[in-house]
Image: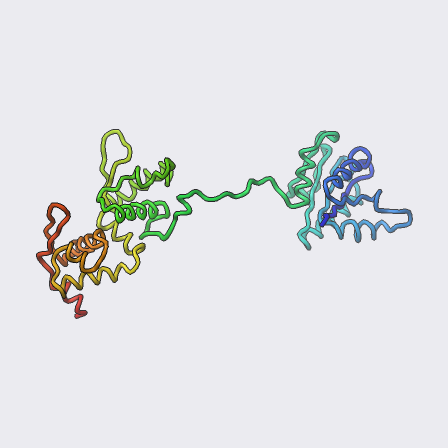
Length: 315
């Protein structure tokens, strides 16, 4: 629908600016209402201007000049435009063409200043855009890949740190390697998964809070690191489905079936070996079991606490 705009102005400005300006508005798809075009002899000024011009306009453009700022008729049109803006949310666009005092009522409104009345293309474009409600703001693109990878937060970690820990733990589950290589995990097709500085900060924070154990060397750079029992447990409780059921299953085969080898437990439950070994490490950390670890990843449970048995029985 073609927007209608009322152009409020002083008669002294009509020939030097307003006529050509209104023509250019119409050339740009705006139905500019101008008294010279709309009014005939015998028409009521009040009815035509206030009932047809201002009332039906989507926007009111007020031409402010050394002539118009003192005109009582322009002030009446401005007052009507202000009331209309308050009541309907319509646009009020001040255009300043002289070095003149802007009315107090418009000082809190962004106005367009035109200094050269024969060349004002950029100003005209901004006015047309304002009428149509358009702007030159760039469209919103897709967020970075690492932001789209945000999932559940882990513990009290923020999104970045949660993502870094999650990807690290997923790599451990996939490879079975206790040392996580950040160059492999956080670089996909030569593109960083997480910005380098963010990754450095995150690894330092995860190390400081006990989620991982960094290996440090002279010269800086990224080096493989280990995920701590605490770190993997924080991940597992959030990201591994039915994790607590897996813990209960491991405890059950230890207490009820007397399985003492991590390999036997893994085969019995058909579970990921990393998860089984982690659960055994958690139980050992809490003093529920003691195990002897041997070369090749084999471990043997040689002590089960009475409290673990009691916990399983519910007594």
